[in-house]
Length: 276
Image (tube, rainbow, N blue to C red; front, side, top):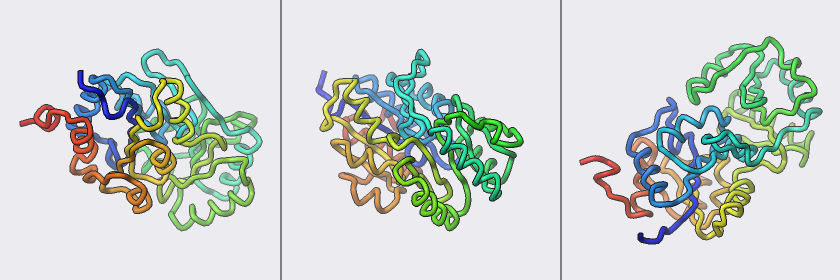
């Protein structure tokens, strides 16, 4: 068998494999499966909760664990084994909940791979449309006081999340990893949680050197893992900052950019991936 150019392939989900309506193309799924069949570890590396990524793992017929919550969790769908998990310290989570409930901000609260919100809002409906996540309204998130969630996301307008990001960074400093994963999402995670650190840890566990790691993504939360990987591919629909650090820019998701990149890099059969 011809040797593989990369033995660990980290693929972002939203904007790379899944579009804004939570759909993925058959060509992209076939390309991922073909790379896995050749012996590479194909890892979905997503900001989503684990439960909202499993469907894509199964449809692509993959073999490696899923990196979810922007690196706060690694879990294998095959046996449910959690390889790695970092959570937000309870006092900090409680402080964020109090701020959002008092100020009337929408907050996603992720605990034990469930997604809770205070109430259904236009923001929760938009998030469900984008990710297909099951969302559970609970009346008040203060019921989880003293718990350590995997992640929290404040969702609001880009202007509001920009302003609040600076305020929260001043308040929490290095005690939390605070990230705008897209224009409306302001995420709060354990300070050790990001895609790069977790991908590096995963590569070490799998015995894969950095230069044999390929990362493909489009968003701000992909920048750390794309900087760390031996080779980085940006989607054509990626943010400018992502394109600028990439070794190669693929076509956008609407043009099966992921499949195009994998065919080019791994020499896959074009007819098998795209059809005749």
